[in-house]
Image 1 (cartoon, rainbow over the protein chains, first blue to last red):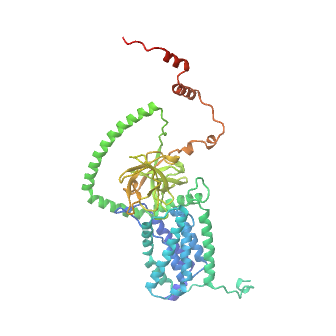
Image 2: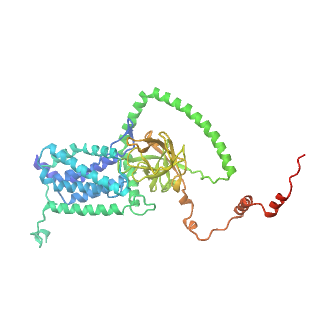
Image 3: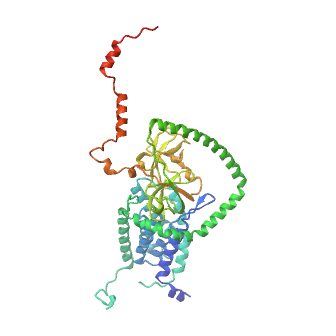
Length: 171
Length: 331
């Protein structure tokens, strides 16, 4: 079973396809509708990529793929270009550096690790906006978007479970 | 010869460090782009062209992807509308009664206002035509609040045009391509809007912070605001025309002034783009900075002479004659 899955998993399986799914999800949730007076949540889907790519296997492709995904988010959301690219890359770098300390632990530790890296990404974005726009962004809305992003942990966990036994040869 | 068989065959870079180095290079690129980007570039400088291209190319993709989401949302709206029909009808009847009173008052005031303007020969802003558009993308969050609408340069939309919903101002155009435009919402962290308080004529700057209720900063005057005061665009700086409805003043938990936006009352589906020619667009900058003034036209010269004659003191001879002439005895 593992042998079959190993053969099927290529760069497009763990890098390109998840990135496309994240981008499509972001575009769909930008639909301007309200359900019961509340707009759709807008989590930062690529945060899952920043975490999962580092956990599955650090790769030189990862940072540059995240850079591209971050640029897309900024262009699409109308944020300063480079904002989410920077935030995601800092989270990814944090994940790579702390990888040896946390891999192999239980789901709780994994969740705490994901939440910590999400805090890193949001703090970086928050500080960047503070410096750039000379205003403190709304803390309530920041926390809401953080919670929506944190709620994506089960997706990250599922991806890790799916890929953890795969054989990724260096490219 | 393969790379691994060459002189570097014994070189072994630890993977983690190689990845960290790649991440550092990517961070440097991101920082460089972040510093170079100016989101509100007036012209097509910087990355404005790239942003417009992304908006334009994603608009049709989004039309397809969002179809089921829209269908789901409108289905829920229909169901809730069905169950709330009676109370909604009652509310609308009351609103119509209130609006009829306002309509009569507005007609009377417009009549008086037109006469005053004619009497004072006031230079009023020319009426701005508008185009209607549909909001096709909505990005929210604490760090960016923007919308993409399906009207662009092909129907005359320009950078800086104000955008309104049926309730009030929502923002202004910061990016235009042929078929779509990007609107910076009033709630965006980079949005600054000069407003006035309708009751006191006090001025303030509406400052977006990514939340639903933007802040009021630089409020001028002694006790210029009360909760519930209506805020309008002041027209200062020529970015917006004067008098567009913005919202109602309210205090937050910390006692700071914020604005409950009129545009937040209902979902923003259709919007109106005012093709407003602000001051900077109407006046040629070269004309303003010209060292020599252009000559007055004949009509302007006649007006000027009439004003000068009115304000000039009486000639000395007439004054003396007025003093020397004894008052005529009353009969």
